[in-house]
Image (cartoon, rainbow, N blue to C red; front, side, top):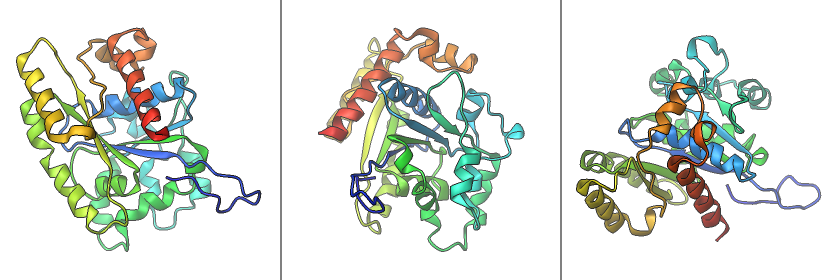
Length: 273
């Protein structure tokens, strides 16, 4: 969200969070890893970050030991008709000592919203309205999106300033993003400003000729809509997941940690440009 002076009695510029939806309808491409690791990288660069798990599978939540069956207030509450957002955000934002960012856990009930919101007016803008209450409190809001096209993904894209698309450097993963691009094209026909998106090559193995070919193809097809950062395969990601931490807590000098720090710097640099 862009800077504004509205609502500020002193006429000072208010800095609103940049909202980044991390999306790909194909699972297993590093979406949740990106949401959590990028969130931590940004906090290590002095940014205040909120990560929202909007995936009914709740992988990001479970990773941080927010188990759906034990959490009563979740991202699902943001979609209630009578939500009191001023109070609600205070109830659903959680903290973990192992990470520097704030976190909103998911609920399996998010999967019910496709039906619950079917008759709701402006159902694709519910999340935008909710985020308007807290975007002046953060520098970045990262949304871990569900791996399918539906009302949750539409809400995340509509609310975002940037859609970050992790793309595994594999032919099937590259082929599968067409549906996401089709969704963005449809939204661009009705939204007041076009959806910005940028791809992040993930799970790259430079020793494999197929990976190198796919990376070159991604860069050729998407050109400046691809981050210069490439995230390689790193077993430290699995170790971090198994221990309920992010990779920085396992080995902050590991290749994966350094690459997500590079990505965070690239995002900040692009915003300042």
